[in-house]
Length: 454
Image (cartoon, rainbow, N blue to C red; front, side, top):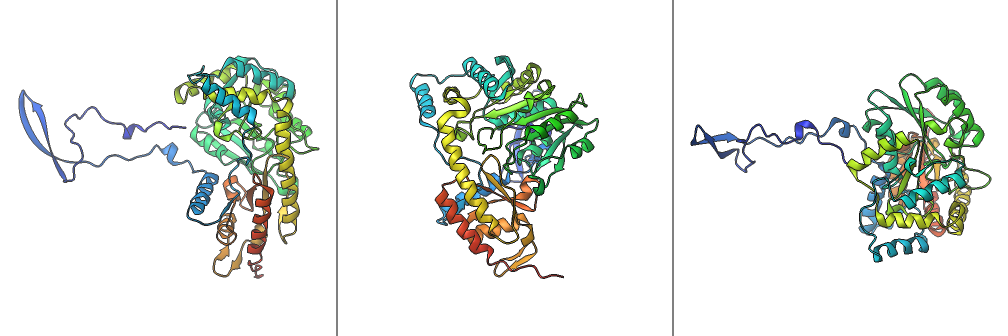
């Protein structure tokens, strides 16, 4: 998203005689004064390169940085296995791709309404009613350029400077930065691997105050793969409903990537939660459509209208071609039909292999994910250990650097997600690739000398 330029860096029109920069410390300029030309020698001033303090406070995404680093190494000839990005390795299902190509052939390449085409918004309403048990009309749906844009706009629309955004950790890397961008304060609620990284209701209750404006929930979770059972969500809802000012943003982008017996529950479907819930979903993960950039927000009309205002000034509507493809995706059947279930079956096979393999490593803790395609693995028992030729494994970042250097496997440090004890592995890669990566990781971990007791 584009950030507004600070006033200090905007061009000034009050000094028309200000010279352009020159290779010389002094520049000659001509000005008209009292009807006569005069020449003045003035010193050239450096351009003000100040960046907005709000933008300066943002941290770049570590997942993107590590993915870019792995790509650069591969381009340099290093056979790095990249397991950092949250992107399915499958191609977009043919029927969806064909719908996009047909849109181009048919000349469906112009702007659409800012909120998205009516046919797509109607299809989204039908999907939400049939699959999630929540009822919306088309004017309560906003289609955007990816779920990420939906979340950012939602945070900007409902939060003000001084507000607090409650975020369970581990969290998706962008949530705290989105809160910061809105001038709000992210309040991190830690969870435990022993409790499958699920938020404890009593902790939530202890952190809510008059500044609390938004609670962000992600189920299935990135980065942990945890799925909130309905009973736990109902306990959370019982707390939320006591605070009229507190809203909930429910990020459900991994909804269809879920493993039995886990079941997905939309927060807005719970008693009394529809009016205060902003539901975000999209097409990137379940339908392998990351590059199509298509997501949507469903919420009460006044919230959707506010987000639509932001979108109209930032990007306008989503791609017309992607929207035709998204319509085809929703027509695949309940929960994406066979195309999605085939992908989920492959993800589950990979998960099972990796969980078994990591459990074989001494000192490693793991919570078996119930959804998404990530493992969030606790390697903290290795911190403080020495590796000959590398140095000390101090934290999740140094561990990931070690594995990149010695195993040539790119993973994401857990500190990017608010839990430095862990590292994240994406298993959105072929099983054979994961088997090779696992062998390399085991060989590298064998090089780590155990910590010496003080």
